[in-house]
Image 1 (tube, rainbow, N blue to C red):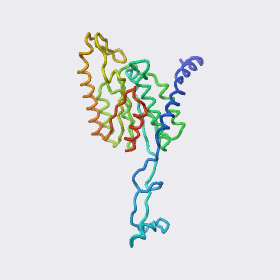
Image 2: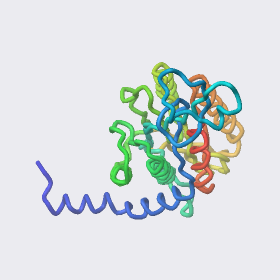
Image 3: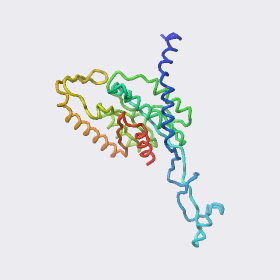
Image 4: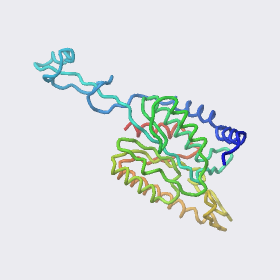
Length: 289
C-alpha cells in the first residue's frame, strides 16, 4: 500500500533535511581546488601544447608552425593535447559501522565520506568531467551534483555490518573512488579490485576512520560491538588488546595497499578530525596522475 501524502511528505522532508548543509560545505571545499582540464596525452582539439611533429602530406599550410620550422630545413606542426570529458564513479559505503563517531565534536564516518565524495564530484564536474554515484550513469553539469547530493542524503544506513561496491557496474575507461572504513571482510573489496584490473579500470580506495579506531584509547572493562550489534566482544582489559588491534589494522592497510598497487589503484587514509581539505587535495592529486 502506498503511503499517505502527509506521510510521504514527512519522509521526504526528513530525508532532505541535511541537503543544504551538505551542498554548502561541499561547494566551499570544492572551490578550494584548482579544477583544470584533464588532458588525454594525444593529439587533438585542445588548448595545451603537447608536441612538435614533422609535417605530413595531409597538413595544411595554416597548421604549420613557421617559427619552429624556420630553425631547420623541415616543416613542423604544433600538436595540441586532446581534452575530452572523462568518467568518474564514486561509491560511499552505507554499512552500519559507517555511522560511528567517537565524540559529539566529530562527524560520523559516513558524514565525512559524503562530504568528501560530493566535494570531489563538484570539482570533477567543474573540470568538465562526467560523474555519478556507483550504479548510476555518469553525467556532466551542476544538476548532476544536486542529484548526487540528494541521493547521498536520502540513502538509509544498511542494517548489517557489510557493504560492497557493485562490481557489475564497472565499465572500461572509468575511474572509481571508494569511500569506506574497510574494517569488514576484505574479500569483496579484493574481488572488486581484481575485476576492475581485468577491465583496465583504475581508481582510489579511501579509508575513513574515527580517531578512536586509529588509536584504540580504551581501558578497563569495555563491551565492543559492531555497528549492527551482530558482533560483540566483552573484555575487562581493553588496554591489553591495543597492540594486537593496531597490528591488525596495519596488516589490513598493507593488504589493501598491496592489492591496490597490483590493480593500478591508490590507497589512502583519512581521520575524521583531520581537515577534509587534506584528503580532498590528495584525492585530486592521485586522480590527476
